[in-house]
Amino acid sequence: MTQARSVDTLIVGASFAAAAAAKRLTDAGLETVIIERQALPRHKICSGILSPRGHRFLIENFGPLPREVLHEPTYCRGVTFHFPSMVSMSMDFFGGTTPHLHRKYSDHWAILQSGAEVHDRTSFVGLEDAGDHVLVRARRQGEDMLYRARHVIGADGPSSLVVRALYPDYAKEIPWFFVGQKFHPIIACPLDEEYFHFWFHPGLGHYTWSHARDGRQIVGVGFKRGDNFDARHRNVVRYLEDKHAVRLGEAEEHEGCAENFGPSLINRYVFGRGNVLITGQAAGFLNMIGEGMSCALHSGALSGEAIVEARLRGRPVQETYRSMVASEVRHTTDQWNPLQIALGRPHEADFPAALMKLTWRERRLVLRDLWRFVVLYKEFRWGRQIAAASLQRLFAPGYPMNTWR
Image 1 (cartoon, helix red, strand yellow):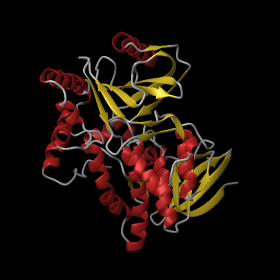
Image 2: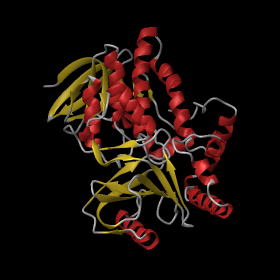
Image 3: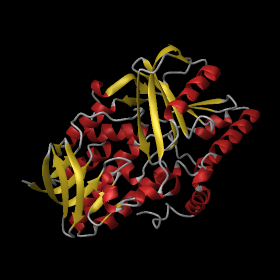
Image 4: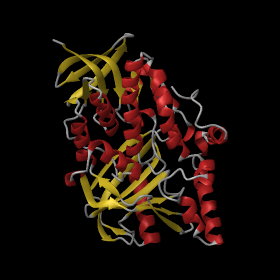
């Protein structure tokens, strides 16, 4: 027998985006339920380095972080970029160090702080927007569930089932990458453990990083889906040993997932339809160094605010949400915009200042290496889209909405 439940808002996915949305909704007195397919607290694949902006949001909205939500080292000072020419650039975050989050516990802590009712071990099955409400079908421990909600928020990550329910072909329209990381015992590692290390090296992959965690070293690599993860990873480990004198033991653990890098680069976000809103990485938000937590928190909060505002003003929720979330689109897409990088300060670490500290020869090498890295993405034919959006942004306060879904 199907169990039925009526709520003001149903959120799919117990993520940071969900916690931020739920906080706004419960603060406004709206009955909010979060469903999550896994038992909580659940594992989350993530390196855990939070940006300063995300850190401020957590403190302002949920309070000081408890010790149990942090890895060792408990903080990160900034990011170091490494280039094939062997030039390295270390940049401290504006505003000081940021926390190194253990996502299994930090996400759950934020969800509990939000005040929403949580139904874990509950899998989203499908939905139907009836105009004045949305019917959501779910399954909880073998039992069918039916939720009747005024609004639904999809906050269920890059491979969002809510997005697939609304737009079955969307996943085929954007390129997908596989991002994996392995955890190694450290024999010798000269890389500064207070920094997140990133390599702009086309021979290593589309996204390559490393940093310390709990006495081990993460070695991560991202590449076009379909390539061999183990082979890619071995190549990076050899490179780190040859070029950076990093000596690691055999990997003790590994994990990986599919990622939708493209939307933030080319302004191809998906925000939902009717009474269903999409937020966080499900919508396409991802910062330049692959940190998605801060934009998930901010976009999630905006989805909650949009529902509250739409109900108060009697306005369509999609129109309200898209107007509000344009600010987060601007903030996130600016980080990928070459003109904004050159002319402004879109990041939370000062790349132009770090570049100016280099010699003229080193600057030329870095710019050459950056160009060769960007060419790696040529097959996705993003060049014209990035160029068009960058030029439009010079003369407008934000990015055009006609590419959003």
